[in-house]
Length: 121
Image (cartoon, rainbow, N blue to C red; front, top):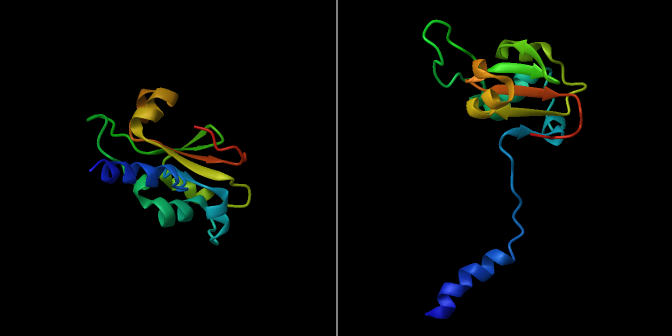
């Protein structure tokens, strides 16, 4: 009975699985495709990032915001203006994380496009 309980723990210890961060589209993922702009990349690889999750205000409903190297560009349609040549990674921040980082009017999340090679939260 004891050997059965220990077997799964031993199997997990030797496991070499890697953690995949589903909030990031990496440079390698982008290079594997021929996207012409950031919108095409997000739409193909994580289309759920483009969807507004719910109204954050009755008078002024919010939307997912797009940032390029920490500069606010506007809504998700601005992703179409970002060509892929210099893009290193694209990261999604959910509403809670985006609000903590950029303020209360970011409750629907942020898509950050970076031309810098470091993937940082």
